[in-house]
Amino acid sequence: MSPIKIANTQYEVIDLIKNRWSPRSFAEKALDAATVETILEAGSWAPSANNSQPWRFIYALRGTTGFDKLLATLAPGNLPWAKNAAALVATIGIRETPDTQQKNHYYMHDVGMATSFMLLQGLEMNVYAHIMAGFNKQQAAEVAALPANEEAVSILALGYIDSAEKLDEPYKTRELTPRSRNPITTIAAHLD
Ligand SMILES: Cc1cc2nc3c(=O)[nH]c(=O)nc-3n(C[C@H](O)[C@H](O)[C@H](O)COP(=O)(O)O)c2cc1C
Image 1 (cartoon, rainbow, N blue to C red):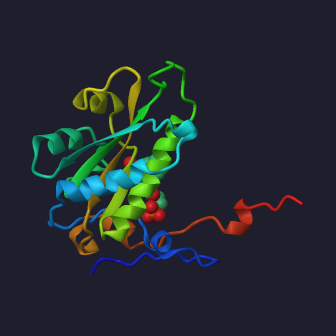
Image 2 (cartoon, rainbow, N blue to C red):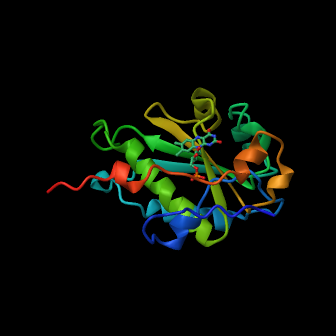
């Protein structure tokens, strides 16, 4: 059985947010390009500073050379489970605005915004995502042939979810551990 890791919230937040979590057990079921691109398009509709859209998304489906190349950039702690993802997506941040060559101070923020939208769109389609910062940035830049003003921000593992039993430790325990967050009282302040 795949675990259900519904957020135990103080207030009633929307189901997509309550039900989203970052799994490591992915099913053999493949993803097609149209499904992945639907998720990427959702990301593209995220807000960004000045509508600069400082992002690109480079994806590869399992079973392709591209997938193996992105997989090879992952840290040892991510490789054992991410190899079973149905797709990998490198989210790319564009550091300077192409027209003006000015530094875009919000590119990381905006790539994160787009990534959030992708995660929620994916879940609506039963496709789960696991964000990873554990990868070799230089190697990813080479694999994706990034120009000097672009940077790989994260790699997403995408796929349908499978049983926690399929995982070895320590991943199995992590898969079954309930999600937790700092209570809202500790992070929200009401300014009178
Ligand atoms: C920027 C970023 C980098 C992350 N890098 C990794 C990673 O390299 N490996 C990993 O297993 N999880 C990674 N995660 C997943 C987080 O550990 C996970 O989102 C967090 O523990 C909360 O769990 P939840 O997403 O299930 O609520 C990353 C998440 C973010 C947002």
